[in-house]
Length: 179
Image 1 (cartoon, rainbow, N blue to C red):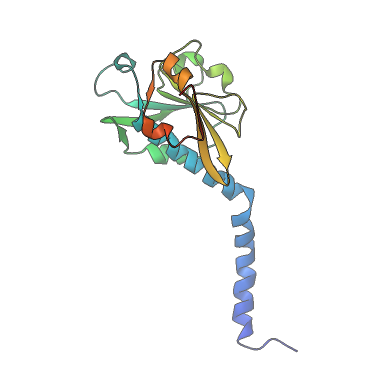
Image 2 (cartoon, one colour):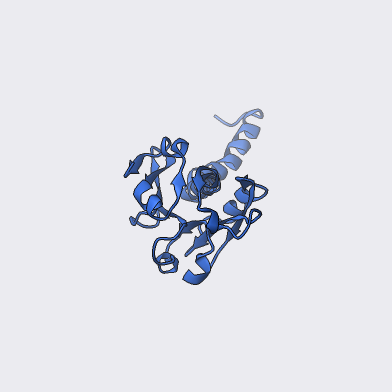
């Protein structure tokens, strides 16, 4: 039994689609999607956290989102922050290479190998960690549950750093320590 003329286009379409489906289901897309979601969360966190007034040099100073260590976002964080604001302040993304340079950050995502670049002592910096990188927890700690990016919040650590986290964000957390 041979292929009919009408079967050939269907077979060609099926063969062309297989590699794309195999790629789409594989880990690279999942990781890319996961970090795109995490990038959007980092940008959104800025609107739900209040920093002490002295954290900014003036009323036009931006909210600085930093990544230390390995950057898994592949440009997604820069795209997510582009043209966004929080409390009337622009959002900017930086990648400091020293702990001293990280002091000027408001949100600090700690990627693989970035632990040594976290400024010492309690500072008004929202420290964000990631279960995909380390079990060490920041004030906000990303975790993937049921194929969704979620997070835990350590309200005590945020309070020690003089940060106030909105109850709307606390309600979205998997867990809130010290709340």
